Image (cartoon, rainbow, N blue to C red):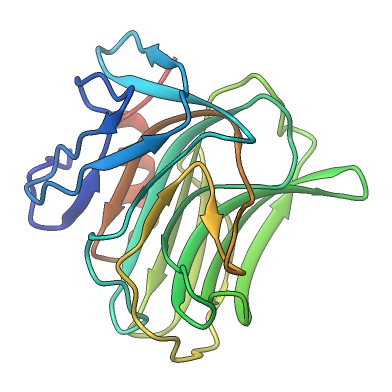
Length: 226
């Protein structure tokens, strides 16, 4: 079943049909618009929506007045990406800011020459539970979708790549303080801006419930970027 951006379960849905050069407009019913920093070039997609090309150094987007993020609630993060360089970067996160705040984030990085995708949940800058996977299929210059989902009822975490489950695990609750932050293109997790993502970010989405495999595959198909 296709998800409507105006559904009550959608907390944020960005870059739909409105030029995001200075402000990423929220197409959900909540109006959590996000201001951009730097001058990330705008990408016009074939489906009429947009993306932003982050430079990995000065570009990012942030709101400090979004929904309250806490481990007591379930969430799903979804975003389309295309990396310029496969290096350490956090393209999309909710929560965080001060050390000890609760955060959920999607991440890419390299270790010993291997490319990884990761979902992290936990206390910002203190202790995180994370699940990750490496694959020779991961490549720069190609569009792909990450979906990370967290279930507050049983602490489960699942990571999806292009609609397919690739990793799962359990979050060890840390009771970090709540936060209202949302970051696109980077995040603060030790008090200064770092982890800048170098590449294209498209269709960032936050939902207030845990996704199953069928829902993840459907969202991938519904938002497919070619």
